[in-house]
Length: 208
Image (tube, rainbow, N blue to C red; front, side):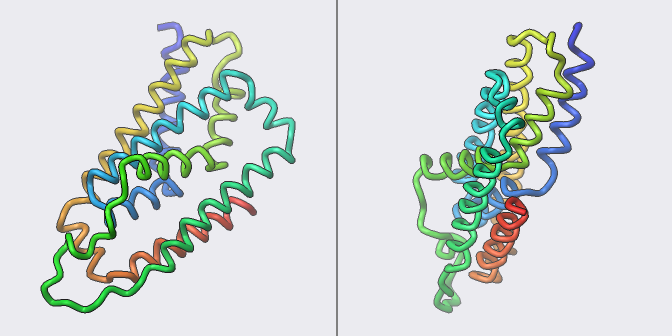
C-alpha cells in the first residue's frame, strides 16, 4: 500500500504509452490481417516479453549507462531503424495476387509462419524500439523513487509486461476477425504496401 500512488502513476503512464500507435501496433495489425489470430497472439506475446527486457536493464542500472552515452543510444536507434525499414521493405515487395473470384480469406492469407517467428518478430520490434527505451528510462529514473525496493520494481515490470500482452492480444482478437480481415484484404497487396510505407516512415522517425 505504501507504493500504491507510485504504481497508479506508472499504470496510467504505461496505458497511454502502450495505446499510442507505433511500431508494435503496426506489426500486430500486419500479422493479424496477413497471418490470422494465432500468429497475432504470439506476436503480441513477444511484444509483452520484450517489456521484461526493458525492465531488466533498468533495474540493473543499464538505463543510467544509456543516458550517459549518447553514442550507444544512437547506435541503438540505428539498429532499430534498420529493423523497421527491413520489415517495411518486405511488406513493400508483396506480390500482387492473381485475380480469382473464388478467393476467400484463407486463400489470400500469406504462407503461415511458425509461432517462434511470430514471437521473435514481436519481441524484436519492441525490444529495438527507442520509444520504449526512452519511456522505461524515464520511468525508472524520474518516476520510480530510488528508495523503492528492487522487488517492488520487478512487480511494476511484470504488471507492465502483462498489461502490454493483454492489450495487444485484445487488438489481435479484434483485427483477426474474418469481417475485419476481409475488409483489409479487399485491397490485397495495397494493404501490405501501405503497412510497408508506415513501417519505413516509423524507421525514419526513430532515427531522426
